[in-house]
Length: 500
Image (cartoon, rainbow, N blue to C red; front, side, top):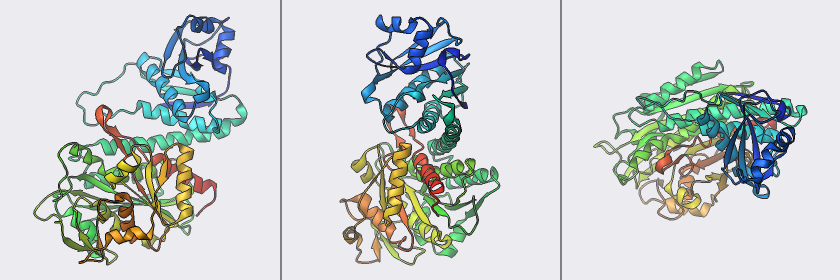
């Protein structure tokens, strides 16, 4: 897909299609009014007859509009103007995109970024338009023997802006949107792959492929023997029940002077989680291929960062394993020793994500990161607490939490902060080890983060629980690519604000 930004009157655009908005009831947007005026009231005559009311999701494709140079005009319903917000804007972009992609118009000029959204400027709307288009057009075909292909798919979109003065800034945001979309698409595809293909070894090979695309991106793969030498007893205890060997994937992106402390991202890479001896229920267990969405989002963020050539240093660490029941698998009551030296009583083998993460977080400390963020599909409790809308956020450093929350609000990939109070640590007490790996039924998301906090005391750390946001279930089942957008925006903000 090719994206461009330009400024110009809609009636003068020589293109396959012009896309303009209509608000409810039958209220033309500025661009639609311009077309209507040029065509001597052609569009308003149609709306008066009731052909286009302007309700959200409604579309009307017009041909041969008088006194215009375009082949078609697509009217898209935007709902009530006073209610037009971020979500409606995304919906309008997606609706227009799918209509055109199915209808054979291979290129179009969108005048939708000119629609007013309170508190949002044109460059932001340009970035969001790219994200919405790419999200709407994403399809998974990797494991289909005969994927359907459109004869004339949408290939080029020009996003119109009111003034050329904003052209440079809008082009920068266009690039940002394309890079974030590329990262999100990578995260989606990796997550959607089945567990028999996307194994820890496969993830390691994908990291190598990613590294080969960029000169300033290096990769190191630690094998189980390497992890044994490092004393990663918690991580290795999870992989014992699987025939697939665990991998610790380390990506090093150098975008600025090596003396600048890196941002560290740690992504949970459970390529399939059956729960181990604490076996999960059979219903929807297929979705446990998505337990590596944290890893997928880290790889996607690295791709976005590298494409944008961000002047920042980044360490991406992905502990990857399977969690299966086997004669060698963890048993409830087992005690393992982490890389940090803390002993852990495993009360539930299905709380394995924190076991692989804790050793990865200890490993990251050697890089002296400015901040470290782990991303994990960690707890079902987070889905209960926040649903499918917001990531759960917990942190030991208020400024870091604040920056992540703001990045989420800016890009529209929001998180919600939960408390990380010392009182919750009481739930992790063990009679037989330094810490238990679960804290009981109450506050499951918080106690999981409390467990991880014991391994991050020397670092500025934040934890994103994406169990509710990383994929959708039902007839539209699939990975969402979140939180690649949030993480990339966070890195962009650090660059813009000169934070190291």
